[in-house]
Image (cartoon, rainbow, N blue to C red):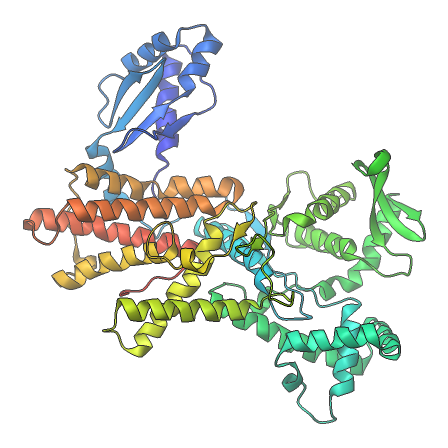
Length: 575
């Protein structure tokens, strides 16, 4: 995608004028006006600059506007105690909308290598609703960064190792008949996991056998390793089926499991020992850093090796950190992990930096997120307290969307209705997630997310289909439109401006990876189109006006399509 950052451009213009006036320019504070419509921006930095340079704000604002004079593309006026209101002229918007494209990159040429650690299900059981946020948030970050020409390394750090697999493998070995296909035993991983766990808790002999299987697994016992590989293979197939249905870009090739770092764990301990960072505490090898303190200001241990010789998650995460820093040579690493892991990741990053695993210029960031709740404010679980399977949620979304589509358009074939229902249902789930502030909890509400009104995926998808219907009705091929866009009405100007603001929205998103910024942008774009559609006739106008407005509608459709694609949400031609 390409375009321009209007706020950045305006700030540069204001800065140049202030420089000519001999005024030191403060940090940019150009923003789109919340009160003024049709391409108004406001320069708020004038107030701070006036105070800093000893001028009355309106006097300084007058000096700046005098220098700017009669600008060809913008008009300037002083407002309030010293703000400068800036209005984009239609000619400026026309010129830039003609050059706008959703296919070229927004990159400034500085390509980064970014590792994104996301999804990361535990392969002991099927993916559940709790995996939705990490998976969708992380996948959006990957898509947006790639659209900006950055190199993205998707890292699915799945849990496939540890004590729990001892009981699972022991149970699998116990119930499997010689020569029987193992995958048939794992058709419902959730029930398999529950059965193995119940047996582990209630049968001391089985629990002892399960512990032996942990030792066998860590010792690469052939039979145990064979069972483990089969179990992991089936589990990954379960995950991939969810990713495919959810339109997530992760593949098997992106899996970098906990077990992949197993041989590196003793190396990590040796490095920490050589750097005199390890201290023995109750038999465990720990790192104590001054920045982590608990009650009574006692230092909190970062346990790298347990007293029984085993390795906790922190050791594996340190190995992953070293791999991403030294082998992948990442410029930035994003951890899309729940907020509850904040202390753990802070310790991982701090220990890694102390050990020299992370370079001074490398950025390792935790992108925390909140919980998904039911209407009563409690965690989203089944009546018996079990985690809700994510695949069941996705299937229900499709079923609910299909019912709505049948009510809305009965002229489509059953196959067409099902296809649309899948796109609408899955899109609704993802958009409901992404349109919320990443750090807050939110309530899962079917009626809201599947509504065709308000800030929802169905509303945006419907706006797209309405544009596509214009071209079907007029028998016009949008690729053959060559007429320039002429902006006369306020609704046309605002819609064209909204299109141009895509770059601003992407750059604002990248500041903190808050996808609700992109969602709000797309919602405002769709609303602007609906206003344009209602106030500006298209197909009944003269050839020149019709061609111009169809061209504007087409670039709007392209922007909606591209923007939704950044969120991993598909569109359909009819709804």
